[in-house]
Amino acid sequence: MIRLSKLSDYAIVVLTTMARDPANHCGGATFPCGLLAQKSGVPEPTVAKLMKLLAKGGVVTSQRGMSGGYGLARGASDISVADIIAAVEGPISLTECVGGHDDTGCQVERLCAVRGNWDRINTALVGALSSVSLAEMAEPFIPAAYRDGVPRIKEIA
Image (cartoon, rainbow, N blue to C red; front, top):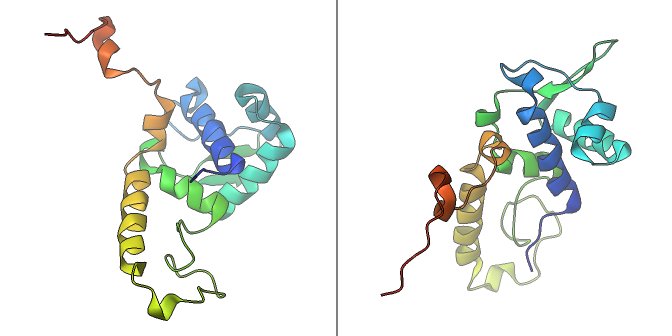
């Protein structure tokens, strides 16, 4: 099973909370960790850990002082889900041989007949995650059958 870590999931929850907040409508708002924890439901120690990782990854900025906190480093439409995951977890790679970030490598890499296919799959996955923005994640999901406020049910012929 391929599954995001809880930290990546929580990072997206916290960042969508920031993107949705009316105070951030035009961007530039800062949020203290306590407020983000309260609004998102993610425990404050986890929010603090995430904000440090996201700041290091260039997804958020930090501001010290009385009116300090964290803010989005760029517009929500310019931050992708791939950016968020990479900031929290490091480079996105499905196996040891793609991504090139593991020094241990694979024991059979030289003989592997499927490495090129893993590269294709990893590229497709990164492309899919890169194509979804934080702004899109912040919007409520409405299934196609209910768009425009009109439920649509397929007729069976």
